[in-house]
Length: 137
Image (cartoon, rainbow, N blue to C red):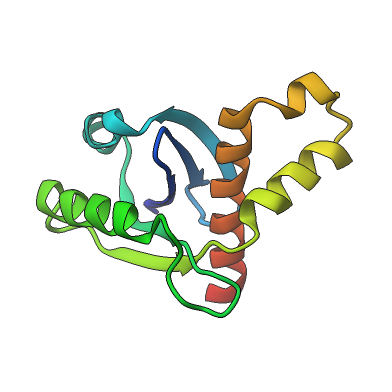
């Protein structure tokens, strides 16, 4: 069974998470520089079967698009041009970074380890994907 991949796209960094082949568990794959996202995904898709991609949709508390929405929408357009046959679903990513940071605290990471923004992005993508799997059922 192909995997599902989640992208937490940001100005500088992009967190990537994937499911296992049974699409039951999400786990962090990596964090990459955002400008390398399409090249990274071309390489990844050449090695792994991916059924669909989940991309975070940043929203304000009132549900309106956040400041970074245009940046992410532009990325989605580039993604769809590079991978025209790959289905893309947008999911609400509100609170994923806060949840990721809390996860780091709960898992016992020290203050210096919690300052690793790349790890926050990877965990946020994982949370987003795990939520998607939960609600997909």
